[in-house]
Amino acid sequence: MASSSSTSLNPDQLEQLEGFLKDWLRHSGRTQSDLRRALRAGSIRMPVLLQELQRTVVSGGVSALAERLCGIEAQWLSGVEEPEAGSPVAVDDMSQLDLLLKSIQNDAA
Image (cartoon, helix red, strand yellow):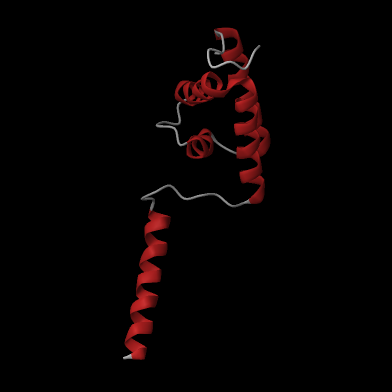
């Protein structure tokens, strides 16, 4: 398969990719929800995840797909996951920083 911008996966390849993803998630102890966050996809449903990966193939070829999945694996293995914008964790961290800043300012006054 060439890595031109017109490259896309056929239905059989998409089925194989789905099987791979399910095995990968099971063996890595991850869920479709984890993959959705890593891909920043709109849903945890497998067709939506596959559509997002299909866009990667269309824009950069199969090698871009491999790079993206390897990047997700590396991110998971490092244990450092980026919180989504507006997620409760990100909001809580900002609240704590704001409280700390106010405390420092009050102590300095």
